[in-house]
Image (cartoon, rainbow, N blue to C red; front, side, top):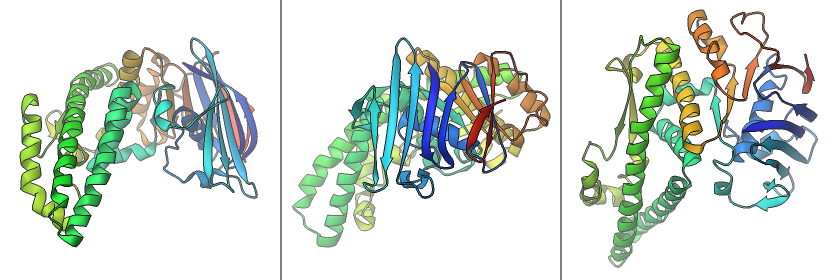
Length: 371
């Protein structure tokens, strides 16, 4: 899959930018605050209808403007024109594919697969369990509409059950317990399916992580991913039984706190290097390498699962790596499909080898030009 063209209007610092892209590597060069990362944000927006920095949509509107518009032309077996229009006065965005409005984000997730590597990825290996769940969920959701729908159903069930727990906490109405039982059954049903999908994913994804390490880091480190669910490991055919037992045990605490305390929304993923817990004992270099290998693995996992090359975004990554790791990673960029890489300049990145088919775009104060 390729993004052939993008047009930005009133999108952050870009008032009117129109770019055609290479199908290989696109180097986007510019100083801090000049608008290079904004181009990546726009690409990610088109692929997911969301932004990777979790900013509110209104924050992307240029100063003294009332709207923003991002349009992209994708090419796979056919061409698709994707357009996102945000109105400041209405306070909402509208998404169109080939002129037809799309009302549900779920209808576009996975249609234009994308992988993004940014400095914020440190939260995956060093942050809270929610960051690792978000990482895993985002990958599986792009590869499986079934999983995405399960996740949406599960989160909806969580909200309903949480509201009911709060009602019971406030009123102590015994009649509400019958409703709670029904929502608990729904929670167990969807939660068990989520866990099974995640178990399958970890088994498959771990192979891609190991392959990335072996290819790029020459086998010097052995990565391991473990999925910790329902507070302890149980066999797959006992998940629903364990789930129900934990809910019964935690019910008094859930009512007292008015929240859901058991399920895949509380699970975690543990990363290890050579049997060492990465989060507890890993060096900064090992953390950064693991984060990058996770993204390379995500790329090849999605490519195999979906049958299309995802778009790969790398935002200001090489500045955080030592020369050896940077050189090793840069040697494998040609294995990816269409790639977008932001850099402050080329002078400090002599290890990057630009081919004739690659493109260099220089960005200054919201204006982009081909170098």
